[in-house]
Length: 329
Image (cartoon, rainbow, N blue to C red; front, side):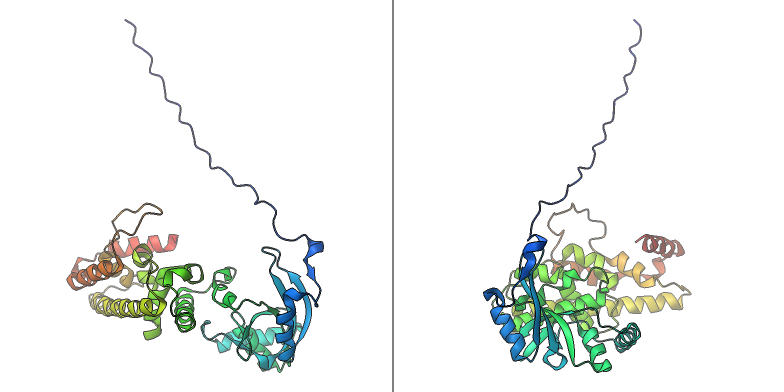
């Protein structure tokens, strides 16, 4: 009998379904303007006038139609929120020099009503530059909802915070919210906080400004989740986890020093030690699946792994591998 010809199987490539544009939403351009006498902004306009400012225009936000007021506010009436990234004098001086050179202050700050005037959740450096330049007033986009101060951080994408700045700002935000809304749960603020590990890292950065948080980010993002308890209770737990992380880092630093004394000269020594001690490094996890272990269990196992770590087990090839992976990220 003639041999049957083998038929090659056709591989059908599954194409990625492209999303089309979202359905139209928000007001039409001609519908955006709001009269300054409109009832929807009456209270905001009153607050602006009370502070000695002037409402310049009002409009509906193009996404949700939220009424917003563009105003000129006395510089003395607006302060940066306490939980923003720390002021960099170098950046503020550079910004004031740039504004002076250009000759115009173009970027309004976002302002929300506060107890005595207004607070800005995103304008610390612009306000500092304005003070240095001697401005009497600044242009502000006034939002009536004070909670926008806790939801604006995710919008910092064009010039994103580094890990330290973001973590510190998130933990400061959480501590402020814990005073204002002590009965609210940590998980209720997930959108504002973005990621649970920012809270844990934030507590560590508060204790040690030069903490190498990025070394532990890959582990924490897999096991750290938003807590179901109230914010004050959750913060107490975060403080404990932050201290445990610092204890682990102290032991890691001791191993790094030993490796340096053995002749290793590489910026990736800490990364090698942390990767070797990471208890979830080799545990597969599907997208959207629950954490492979609890935060407490992960920190406990990592602490045990660090104690058992043997610096003599490190080879030059380990450093080369970590360096290659880091350069690809």
